[in-house]
Length: 368
Length: 84
Image 1 (spheres, rainbow over the protein chains, first blue to last red):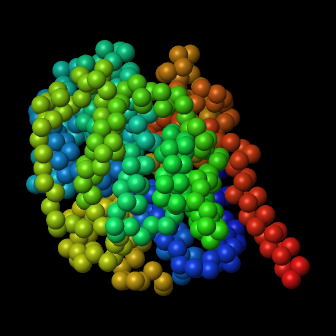
Image 2 (image 1 turned 180 degrees about the vertical axis):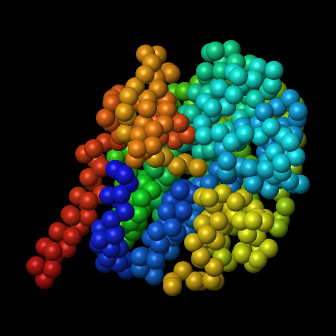
Image 3 (image 1 turned 180 degrees about the horizontal axis):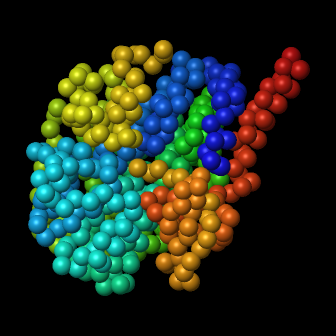
């Protein structure tokens, strides 16, 4: 397919890998933020093409993985109600709550439906006026324009039996949380190409300056990631800390202004708990005052419910790039995709699931 | 989750900019996609699609940049080796 196949060219990938090896004189640790990039890196073995001095660590960029336990439990409570049709992206169904997951609710007769787009959930609401339709609005900035549009259209068209359980998270505050942590080992970032397609990258410029860290907006194909790594290493070797754009075929510096306008119309910035990390100020989106009636937590009186995270799963360390998935004692033993302890083992973009599926089992075993 | 897939716009329907929809082909598989956020996109353009919404129109010139950059790196190396 166009815009995919050409960026998987093996010969060009090897040329990039050789170029990276030529400019690398010291060890560097680079974090890719987005779960889609993590998946591509492990699937195509991009990390195995890199010189030993370059370590790629995997960031918190899987919204499924960072959604806090308390929101999963709220989703389960809503999905269990007989008057509710609960709509969600498929990834969320097997994320463990305190007692069960959404798939179990569905198996026990709950009306839980997997949708491809929030507009599908809106359509289900229109077709089932005697039911309450709740959409689990999970995602980063990339998904916010779609969810904003669903609410905006619901308001405009008077679809009152539709609401969102909002679990939206924002990337820049999470990057700052990682950089300010005493455990931080990240020296450069590959920023998430589709988040920046929506938001642009001006908000990363102060982060690059403040923490003196290069940030390269990067795409999702193997050649994109290799070029992103090259640009990041080049900055590190030269002592520069700038924001550069590798993914210019999709990302403009100002982003998608129309999409940002609708996000600002429908949402407001709120503090958000991240699973395994804790609360980060100004790191999430909630519905704006004007659209509060579409907030499922308000509609069903769930806003005050809080749940403590279990300490069994070490996903917080994995999500901050402090620990690699296979370094966790539970990896592949107590914790597998069939019986996950935490979300990173569930989602197709979770770092633990990616390592499991592509056979990265051995401790320190990234080389064949 | 932030998966965005490139596809080609085959047809466009609707006049209201907020509900403009298009048929987008992903290697022959057709899907209805909301085009509200890419008002400039026309039939024949490639767009990045995420959860049923086009979030950008792909820039054909910038699309070559990955290969152009690589060519420059290799050329530079050739020059450096030539002078040493």
